View 1 (cartoon, helix red, strand yellow):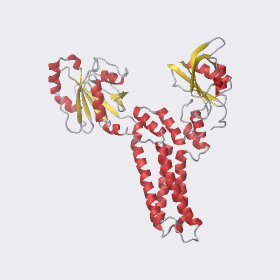
View 2: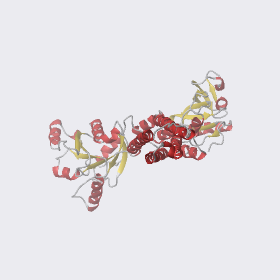
View 3: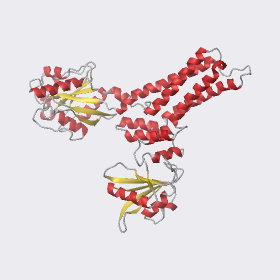
View 4: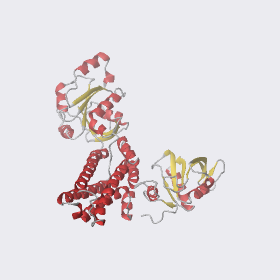
Length: 471
């Protein structure tokens, strides 16, 4: 994957698209010398003569007589992200301009970076272990605040510290078992079978617990879903647009405008959710609208929460509420919509006609206006409370594992299960010391693979190929 690690690489490091600022990153022994050919600081000092951790303002030349304002951020080896000399050129976030800068760096001697190559160099130089490197990939692919928090914990070394502690305990057990082999002729038992079995079972419990927590935390990758449910023209589409900040749904006074499921992400504060808008429920409508409504009611039992949208600008039909909120097993929040069309006495009368939150299903009634934004913050909080299980996943102890890490952890736990079974099946350690040592080393090897203590070309290819170029 990485035939050369001592040449200089270049790539755009900022997200694709137009922005106020764009970043081109270089890493390698010639990074600053190449920067000198492209960038001139306001104080005229060459970048190659600057100390690390410095920011210099100046101009970047993109043609014979053309230049743009820019900043140069200098990081000297070994105290840089990659462990090499690094240079970041910050300028106007135009994709065309950034492409010109990259091409100029290539003409000056840099080569285009491959996906994940900056982080791969950081791993190979020892500035981060493989678990932290995979946390970078988790950060790149995060789709919510909760996922970002989990990736940050991984980047801070939560998993690496746990694996290191397990390795130390396994190394001690392995050394004691192998000492029994080396001193077989001596009347010394370095570790008893009872202690070996107890230690093995303790490690198994801890590894299983981490895997269970990780399995729960995998829900970070799937946002909780909230279904907007209501009669036609109750304002569901307007509410979806207001909560998401997107013009995702067409809003019209004509009933039945929305036929298919529409989705948009909404920020609920502690986490994000995916909100679904669908056809209104109306038993008196034509056949097409009734069939669309039946699909919505079937979906209502498959989501994590319901937001029952009620138009309180007119009389509220209690029987319609019962039909709409039929999915009693799903937490439900009532959004009493269009309150901007009522005065205070009329609003109080309409709200009094709505069900009172009681029991598990109905969690809250919120007076809102999708048109003016009134009450939307209260509605967000109510929906977040209804999705409390997902909020619990945001605790600081939650850890997310990649598929590769889960497989390594499972292999280590299975090896320890075999150690426990062998320890229970013999009378003294020496009887099966070689087999016990082999299984202990198998577990150690699996944990080494998590941290990247032992790596292969194929393993690096698997881990870093999922990164963005420039990371």
